[in-house]
Length: 128
Image (cartoon, rainbow, N blue to C red; front, side, top):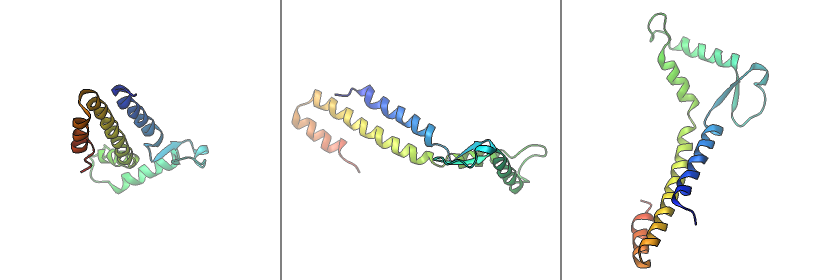
């Protein structure tokens, strides 16, 4: 039987691994490695710099003279983090299910069968 710490710790480790492996849209690599096949898109350092320069040209006029537009950093971050919503949603579902299992184990231990079933059906198995 799993204990409460195992039920909450394992999904956290899985989420961290998913974010590390799948939490980016592009990986900037040296020019000679840009054409290799990978799970996410590789972009050469030269191409990435070119893309950022294009973005800076399109957003000219919003920054103070001699400074870059801080919204460019936000735009680049937003683009890179597009997959985070999906990863967080999957992780939340796993944590919710782990919580249901943990609460079911607690209810089973501290209540009789009728009470346990009633509480589970009323609160834990209610997906609305």
